[in-house]
Amino acid sequence: MFGRKTKLEKLRANAQGDFLRCKQLDTSDRYNRMFVSRIAMRAKGNLDKIFVQGARAEEKRQQDLAKAVKEGKRGFPQRDKHDGYNSLKGTTGVVLSWVPEEYANTMFNLGADYQIQEKSARQCIATADQLAEKLMVELQTQQKIELLNLLRIALIPDNTNEETENQK
Image (cartoon, rainbow, N blue to C red; front, top):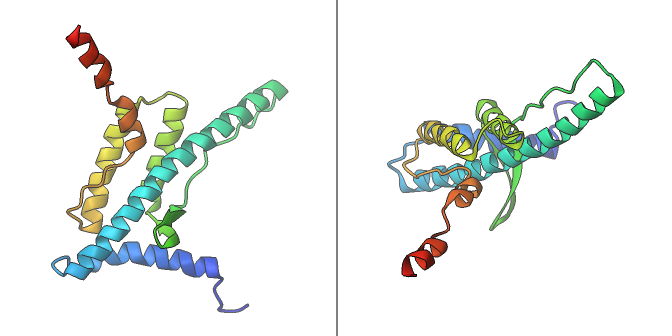
């Protein structure tokens, strides 16, 4: 109807408003710091999820690309863009999170590049660390934001094998 927002539109507006509100809060207040911390953790989860979505979307795009080449088509599928919204599961239920499209598209493209091996895990982590720094400044949080823990864990060397070798 006229002037009425759907429930999804309201949730999106609230998620975006929460993120943008962090820029204006006085972080010397304890409650404001707690709010900013919550939004920062949502943004972290959102960006990690966007990375995975980018990888999956690129996998599908590559299949579509192969199909188009096989069929002799001239128009190739383009890489998608991300709007920055994602639903996240938390302790209180499902919440909607938003990050600016610049951040979302950076992570989305990073996931896609990782999927097709244009970027290594270390390159992705380095780019994600730069993005996390920007995010910390924008949200005015002192809390460390560490993106792409799924890749960081994969890069940790297996110390148990080294210890076993040293003991022999």
